[in-house]
Structure formats: C-alpha cells, structure tokens
Length: 485
Image 1 (cartoon, rainbow, N blue to C red):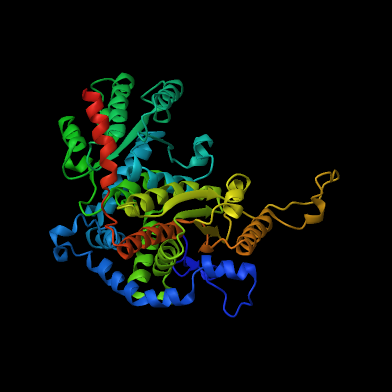
Image 2: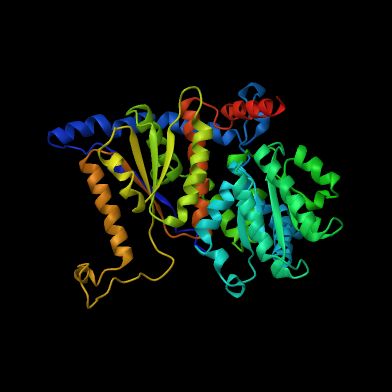
C-alpha cells in the first residue's frame, strides 16, 4: 500500500509567464497565451471563498432548495466509510461490500459488471490501473482467486453483447463447477437507464438458460447496486432479493462522483484490490483540500489554474496527457466528471484524453502546431511497478540502439516527457504536470478525489452547478418517444 506521505503534487509553474523575460516574438506569444502570476494572485480571495462554499455544501441542511441538486456527499464519504467500519465492524456498509465481494469471488470465476457512465467508468479505471494488464488471460492460480472481469451494459451495441454471451457459452459448460460459473453486478442508481436495463434483462435470460429457472444461483450470483427507490430495486425485490442482498447508492452522491460508494468499491473488492487504501488516499486528499494553503493544495491549484487558462486565455480544450497506458481508462472516467459537471449554459472545457507517447504519433501534431485552444495536463507516474527494462546490447545494431544500451524504458519515457514539455514550451503551448508517486490503491484514491474536488471547485468558480446534468435528458426522452412511436 502507498504510504500516506507519498502525496500527489501539481506542478503548474511552466504555464506561467516567465519573470523578466527579454522580448522576443516567442516571449510576446507567451504574454498572450500563458497565465500571468498576478492572475492567480487576484483570484486567491475568491478561490478561498469558493472553497468555503464547497465545504459548506456538505451539510445539505444549509443548502436552499432553489440551489438545485447538491450531491456533495462524496466529499466526506471516504472518511465516513472508514469511520463506520471502525465503529460498527461487521455491520458497517464497507464490511457489507467486502462480504458480498468475497462471496462472489468464492462462487464464480467470471463476473460481468453492468453499468454505464458513472456506474462503470470508475470501476473500469480501477481495473485497468491496478490489475495485471492481461488479468483475464492469466491462469486461475496466478489470479489468486480473483474472477475474470467483463464490462457490459454501457452501450446499445447488439454485437458486443452477443460476443460476451458467446464467450460465456463456449467457456462455461458445468454450472456446478466454480471455474465455469459466472456472476453479475448490475449498477444503476435510478434503474431507468435503458442501456443497462436492456443488458440486465438479456443477462437474466441467459442466466436462467444456463443455471435453470429454479436455481439459487439466480440470486446468489447477482449483486444489484441501486438507489433507495427505482425500477431496478423494484425488479430485484420482485425477484426475491432482500435489502441485505442489494447495495445502496447514497442519495447525496451523484453517479459521476460515486466511485467511493459501492458502485466502485464492490467491483474493486471483487477484483481483489485494497479498498481501504483507496479510501485512505481519497480521505487524505479531502483533508488537504479543506485544510492546506494554496501552496500545498493540489486541488486548489488544479482548479484555479485550469479555470483561469480557460477563462482568461480561452483554452477550452483540456488535454489530459496520460504517461501510462494503465491509466487510460481513468482518463475516460475524468472525461465524464469534467464534461457532465461543467458543460452547461454554453460554458465548460471539452476534455480530451491522450496516452503518451502513443498519441504523440497521432494527436501530437495538432497539439504542437494546431489551433491555440488547448491546455495540456500531463499525468505522470514517477515510479514504475516493475524493474526498469534495459535496452541492452545486440550483435545486430541496424536499429542503432546500442548507443543507448545503458538506458532503460523508464529513461526513454522520462526523456519523452521532458522533450515533449520543452517542445510545447518553445511552441507556447501551456502545459502542467500532475505527478503520482506510483500506481497504487492509495495514490489512485488520492488522484480520483483530487479530480472530483477540483471539478466541483471549478464549476463554482464558473457559476454553474457542477452537480446537475440537464443535457443528459433530451436524448433519453427522444429515444423512449421514438421507441413508443
């Protein structure tokens, strides 16, 4: 587990206008496209005021009804989950998650996670970041009792669901053998999301066909996660599930902020991840947000810098340049957090996730020489999980790599990051670095809480409600109307 003092930091100074820089054409461009330190200084009083506002919103009793939805429960949730476990033990919500996860691990070798948007993106980010890159292909003994994990119910792709069923039919023949059983985690707060609802209906039909209509596995191998009320809860109750069988999503936590509720924690526990370390990392970031001054507060820094660069310098495309393939799905998760929270009233930056150095060979040209409408936030992992792989010597040196024989892939990656940042600085492309100590549960917990808190802060600075999502409704309403027609 990552130690709490190995903290995430945000280095934004490279996108500030350099002090006492002699005039050159490039220096004049930097005056136009980089931030002036005084802009940050002038924002400080308002930034502190907004932090107090966001902190006060944790108490829903202080929020006037006309303020719209305030789903600020995610802020204190990591600490509350840990505190309840200490006080209540086996009866705590966290222990209920752990018990259900253990039961699913023991009963099945494959688990399908059904959900869309915030109901699956967090779990997918955790899976990709923290499990082996080829987890599902590993032999059972090397997975240490952790099931294979599949994600569905996140689209209306007919063929993708068929392919999943075909895989299950080909690999699962005897339902009395644990290694040939599969289970389902179905996640929907409202229960009315049509993509997940259709997939769950199809999955239930497939389960009846495989296990039999009277099999206890139809309940044992299904874990619903939903709100206190809604269609999914009603369906599960009608199927014989009790309250102890259904995990609840807190009313005061919105979907895109729900990764530290059972929505993310149950899949994480089934995956064999250290969910306490995730929560400890998130709780540590919340404490930094609430207590630390700007100079030591990456939440305030990230929110302020990205707000100002969008507002004052019109950089409305926000690139998260991720220097680890294992964090690409975390970029997809952040895309939703940012887009749904800030994209309102004709405002809001458009998120773009890219993977370095892979996407330097596709998007890199545009980022380097294209329109000046972007800010790049590098997400950099300081320490790899595995020992550095050396380039080494070879008898056949047609690739001319022998000159770098003492270098490792880590050295090459670091040179690529520094070289790209230097190229962007010279081309006057605003760039900042978000540094992680390593990819671990504690560090990922810090990072996800940082990005959620910073997004809420930025929304309040912009004057939009970061918790609402009115733009999601029209397509759903049109879809249902067309189906009925």
